[in-house]
Image (cartoon, rainbow, N blue to C red; front, side, top):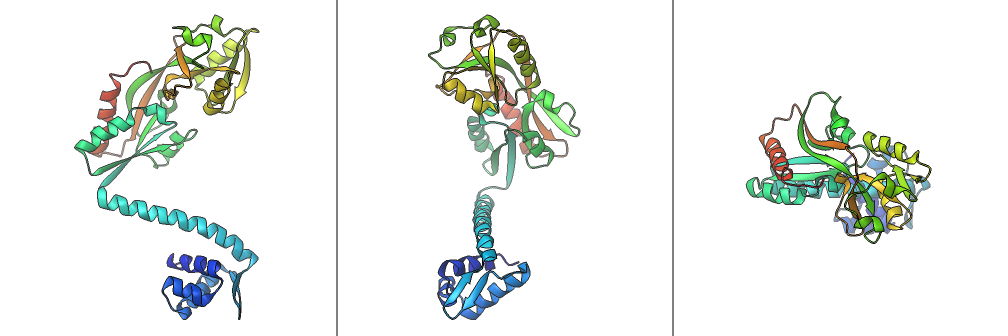
Length: 293
């Protein structure tokens, strides 16, 4: 189907008049009629009821136009982005991660990289629950992940980045925020948010803690839900450091545990672009000097 005909359908749906729609589209009325008929023949149902007074959407046409309007909007965005890319860049590197804070310093890294490679675009893509699946589907070029998530994935290159530790998250005015280190004793009499996509080592620790009758708990859907309850002062949560977005609404205090979760960057083994390797090296060099993750 000619995508130009989409515009004709939408314009006629808006004006409900063939002559006026044709004028707005700068085509003849017979040309517009041909385009509308062509679309209807191809999709197999009438979009418009014609009469001497104009054109009215059929019930099926109304549903079709709603979806068509959304599709056309997304198509126009894709075209505009493609045009921008073709003018300014010769290649694009897509970085997949669960949350922005995982590579909190990525904006600074992008600025440094662009000084050396101005024709390469870097696109961060965020998928809270399925960043690994998006990577495996080839929709991202570089993946940030916990090393435990990638151990069984074949045909990838894995680069150590940093080890993330566990922190107790509370509000800045919580008495726990004044401590330098949180222990299990500090959690007694408090409500602990658990679950919510927690990595396996954290889940194990959560289960150990809630066996203590003095520690109550509440199951969470995800990290944002947990933070909402923390902000409302109804609970606290243990969280990996890579989720820290440095929001002043929260205090992050180290938790007394030996648990440490290695974080890595992954690339597809078949991707031999030197620019991808260069970006990986730049990210790793930057994070070698970052503490407290």
